[in-house]
Image (cartoon, rainbow, N blue to C red; front, side):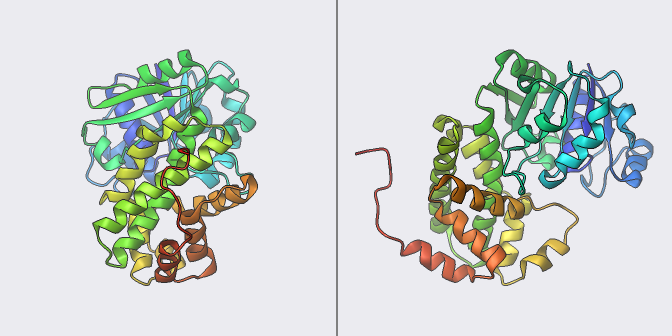
Length: 335
């Protein structure tokens, strides 16, 4: 299969490497021409995926027409707030028969829409042909063939299975799902909660605190998702609990790193300026907070993260306020 991958960051490059190793003909679109040149000449991407040798058969390009020419599948791996403009750049080169996969994670701030909906609005492709790929997958590990698992979701199982076949490999196990919305919500919100877990580490709190946070974060994820129309069980799977666990706990997580720096007392703007990587938890915090107001869903951790990041509230005070909230039952659906 000929496949185009849009976005040469760490995850886009790792997926392009995986697809090439699966014997597909892959062309990787890079916004930065210097990254394109490095991939083609040195077969590395040191800025975004340091220390990984890329297949010589993997070709990078800066031309959307070249990346999409003859492709059967296009995978978008773009920061959430740049997805719409990037999709618009590619729109005239996308044919209705193409399978579209979105492997980015987040929610568009201005519209509060999941990313597959953004693609649906910008590309002339039937809704069921747009797939969400999400799971506990750090690019640093997938690129080194560490055994990993993910989920691909579409309202059409046949389409999901086509994506499954393209990405499945001996070190990358791919499951299918019909709950695309739930898969996307889990993949987006876990970045906010990973920042919260990092803040707890920065404040020198212990494992008890992080365990409590992750457990209640999962409850908030499920509560918002179910209200929006997702299936509750989805959040117990790879794109919910799995991704939440790995992003909150891993040394590779840029969101947890950002949270640790905030917990240590650094200003959020200073933290963001110190890395070339996108910290998706920041814009997703605002989007999730706005969604909680739109759907009138109580999300205490999301609310406190919003106040910390955008209102200058103290992380210590936020924790105290969470701990002293009104008493309640743990499992809300049990009477």
